[in-house]
Structures are given as C-alpha cells and as structure tokens.
Image (cartoon, rainbow, N blue to C red; front, side):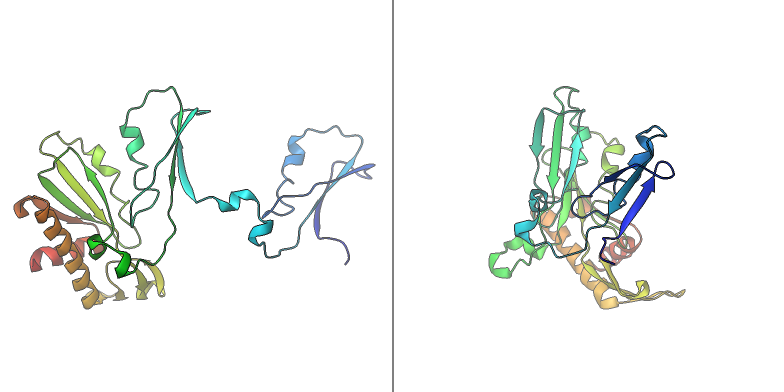
Length: 264
C-alpha cells in the first residue's frame, strides 16, 4: 500500500531490466503506455515498464507551468511551419470563432506561412456604468458583402447554437457584389431549458413541454422578439430602409423571426 498505483508492461517473461516512466502535469500512467509497442524492442533482454500515477492534488498558480497562463484560442495555419503570426481579437460579446471563417476568403499566397491566433476573451459581468449604448443590443457577429451595404439580413440560430452557426454559409451563397448586404447573426442568451432537464444553453425562450402544441415561455419569446426589433431599428438608424431588411431564422430562431415580423 506504500507504492504508487501504476500500470506495468513487460516485453518478455522474467524481465532483467526496468524502466520507470513518469507522466507530466495533468496526465496519468496511461499517457506513455501505448508508446512501448511502437518502440519495436528486441525480445531480449526482457524489460518491465512501470508507469506510475501521480496523486491528484490542487495546483496553485505558483506551481503551475507557464501554459496555464495563456488564453484559450483557435489557431489556423496557412502552411506548415509558419514564419509569421497574426493575433486577431474579437469584439464585445463575441468569441474567437468570430473572424476565423474570414481567413480562407483572404486568398493568401502559400508563402510565407502564417499562423492566425483567435483568442477567446473571458466572460465577465459588464455593468451599465461601463457599458455604452451597444449593451442594449444582443451581441452579434456581422459580415458585410461590400462596403456601405444598402440591405440587411438578421439571421437567428436555433436552440443550443450561437451566431457562428450560419456565418460560414454566406460566402457559399456566391452573392453578387452589389447590392452590399450586412448579415447580422445575433447570439441568444444562455438560459435553463426545461425540456432538457434544466440544462443551461443558448435559447431564445424556454420550452416547457414537448407536446403537439408545444408549450413555451411566451414572455421570453416576446422578449427575444423585442431584442430583434431593436436590431431592426438600429439598422434603420444606420441607413438601411425597413423594406430592405430581412429576418431569417432556424428552429427557435424561426419562431422568433415570425413573432418579430408579425408584431413589428
């Protein structure tokens, strides 16, 4: 009972040599065990490999290795062994996925290879005293097909997704250069969803019961429609005529699109 728990592997019966192989931080004895057969060792001498498990303990910042200090991020390399890097930061309410789909559209040359790094900002409370007017709007991803767009599409995702869901589709639409269109992909807030055992996920409204006449939280549905109405009004303030604004949606987003259009 004084010994560390460990995985053992012998290359032959009655081994005459031993290797005690220690894993790194956050791993366990299974980490390097699969490597042994790949070593293609000879049958003799027999070797006993011992892979002990470190105990699980709290790791405080002074004892953590440096990588624990880095922001989580999405990386994209245009070629192997890049010789340049771009660290691209998203805006308020978005995440590292925001600009990742743009890279292939840049049609960059094969050389020099570039590593694009899209870090995720931490989620923190933003109080009214530090927020500007945009805090009244839903956080959203925007994509313009041309400068100075004269039309807008507000495209709502479904249950459990976010504004990144349909963003990559826009380049596939092969739209003409004119008229320029501003696509807006808002993120629904994360709320508990009753039919999913109360699991917190992005949702435009709560679904209370899965029946033929599906029971939903009507107040939340109307609140989401009001948020989309605010986005419509903002587009009008930005110079887009109301008749050139399209509201689209999938699943829950479709329900909110209907509610918004019929109550605007």
